[in-house]
Length: 123
Image (cartoon, rainbow, N blue to C red; front, side):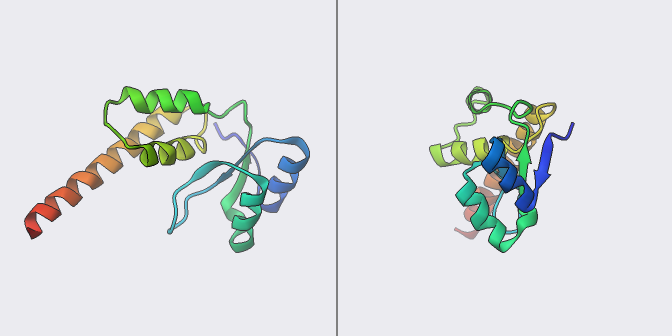
């Protein structure tokens, strides 16, 4: 299920008039983010308007649902990681957000384990 209503500058214009959930797709320098203000979306769009999308707010998972799912993992994410994961979760479709978020948990955990192993090897 794709709950994207519009992308780019059109998404920002619609959000100004009617509201909605402005999001940023991931790019090589920064991950995906949800819950952008119109001002934030405009700043990002100055660099690359294709990174902005407007999602149907009723089809997106809620912040509370995402935070609950993160806390139920028992993985011990710190406050910054939780905020980043919530921002990522807000960009996901309602239908498969839990599976996508679980895959992101696994990527981050594997990356952290690899970093620890490398650190031990270099010591």
